[in-house]
Image (cartoon, rainbow, N blue to C red; front, side, top):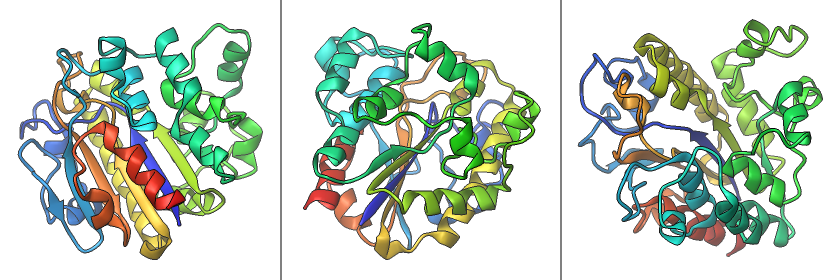
Length: 303
């Protein structure tokens, strides 16, 4: 059994308003088929289909204010109410208190301690590694979690060798914006299949996408629609390659944002969690908050 977690930063369940919410208008046939034809909007409720269970998930965790990336991601990967423990929602990057919690315990570390393999599947460009090696930039909570478990985060060579994917899945942005023309480019469907293939080398594999949060803050709406339609194509590849008997695919987020483009702030909305695989019902039982991932993942992988 193994787990593939697909994380999209800053997506929540918002209003059915095509003027601000790309989830209200994007063409997402693969994803909506998993939720019985229902768009990922406020009020969707729990949905169960042949291959998936969808659960609106609480990122607030009983703490007033807008959920933030560092504490939300840390809650997903520790199973602890990190906002409560530090007294606030905090982000985007983890402060010392959060980093200490991640160093003490996180799911990447738990997997390694059990003699199993875990990896963050994202590749990062040379400038990112340069800045982090010089101490000029903090890692995100999920990057810090993998780092604390001993992973050297993947780089340009890992991408070229097919051992990792870029954060936006296809690699097109590295060609367009970073001018790294000698790196692979996949179709969305190919990228989804590649995610599954890479995950099979690990007991726990996570891939994180951050551009949804950036678009939530900056817009435009059209770019948000493009991203969702791209991800729908990625998920079509995932579903074609994934054998439901081999474990679970989990899709989730840390807080709402892109469902209210123009607001520029995070929202307090529930976030989507999608659970795919034969063990989906057991995983979904009693699941309702970001803190519920780790205990269920541990049960699946460690028994």
